[in-house]
Image 1 (tube, rainbow, N blue to C red):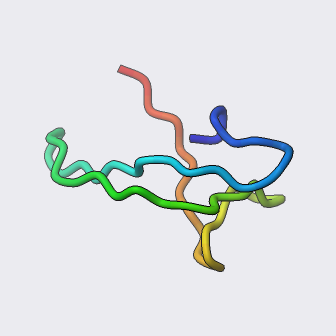
Image 2 (image 1 turned 90 degrees about the horizontal axis):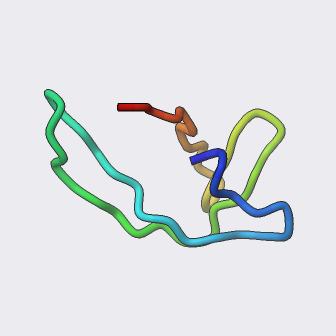
Length: 53
């Protein structure tokens, strides 16, 4: 996710949950902003790990 965040304010992204290599849910999350150590939305830190296939 870190590569899709803006330097100019919050963004909306679909955040996927994966279990056992399978997609289990997608949650639309608004107001995601970059922080010094990653990202957050509504005061909640988000995992910004970039996965490659």
